[in-house]
Length: 122
Image (cartoon, rainbow, N blue to C red):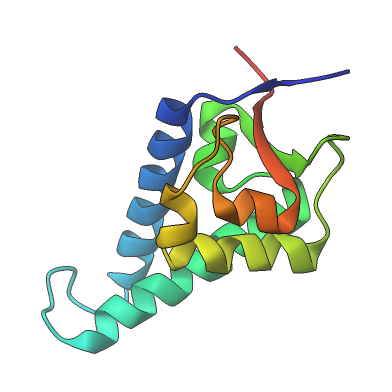
């Protein structure tokens, strides 16, 4: 069964949900609006761990699962290996690879890891 590509809107909304999860998780250790570097780095680490681990284990982060999208290999649409899932998440955290996209709406992070984000439910 072939899945269709997920829209950019769904992908951005999933990213926002994942960032909110990381923010509130970090809020258990630090005040949410703390202005020091430690909470920001902790939030980024929590984001990388949450998204990387969930993608490696289930094919989708929390936000992606809520919005009905999944990360699969390109072009054959199988599950990603854990190493590719974590590499993809690290590249998203660097921001630039995620915002440089091609004509198929795949960012550099997807091209490097030979992955794509697809819609699995309406």
